[in-house]
Length: 159
Length: 145
Image (cartoon, rainbow over the protein chains, first blue to last red):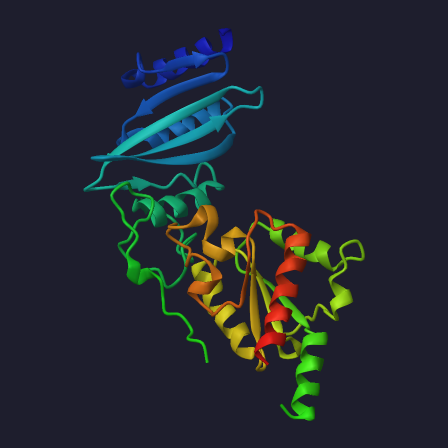
């Protein structure tokens, strides 16, 4: 657990606001919750100085009043640090991290389409993964979304 | 029934050419369909040939729950099949949507989009079950025509 403690301490020194909030779940698994305002600088610091060069994936959450996203970062020696960010559902705007992790492009498009986040700074492109004729404003992976029967388009009749 | 129409019916039943289409399945049913065509299970003894274009086919063999994106393509392919045409839906997903029933992107089974003549359930459907379904379809053609 020496390396995890080391990472926890240097992160706490660099960002005093995160001081006591870093949780070490077990060997090689750490969690930290970050405010929306400075999570980009935290990720940049983690990538540049602490060696967390791998973005494994991003998990989107719907917690009722808040929407959350977890960035699963990993190091070459197997230590994973999960960075959680929560935003209110009424204002789900976050900044893109494609400057730090270019591979986050697809994951951010997914949370934009399926959960209704707005990601500032994302390069313009096709919507992913929903189809082009998907109606706007419908976010299927939110807990309060129901399948509308009109989504099933008409059937060919037997001749 | 006149001799000519009986001969036509006989030839249609004895050589149903198929087109296989995957509308968003996990591929297990596709593997079983292709296995049914190999000499071990031998669908070809019924005169069935796997064609690569819907214009040559009599029967459309579908697998998979129909995704929103595949729906338009499936309809187009169905319309390209010349009459008389039949549809066999292979696997639980194409019969009713299977595990994906009610998902936000699925139509829920091939019969929500095009009329189906034979349903072959299973996950994946065994090649023996596919042969059984095809033989029943051919038997029903014999009876009606």
